[in-house]
Image (cartoon, rainbow, N blue to C red; front, side, top):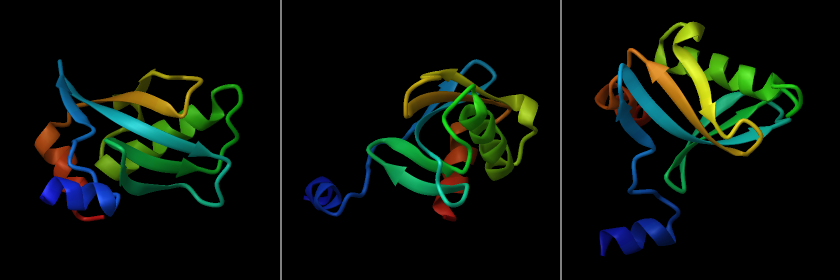
Length: 109
């Protein structure tokens, strides 16, 4: 019943976070060219983010890395877009972060 309610009300039960060696991978749904850059919440099993940068020459990916570094409280060097460079759906690796820490950050949104 709860899963059905969550589906109807666009709330996700699947976590976008997975453990990887040295950190966590985050499934990201990105929106480039937005009015402001921010983490918007969970959507479709992914962390939804919007960035101001245009989706050209890696500008949006670089801004996503910077945005997520600030959001998770790690340095920019610890965040890397590892998959989906030309897609809205991306896989981002955050080194030095656990799934529990990532989920705690999302709870405060």
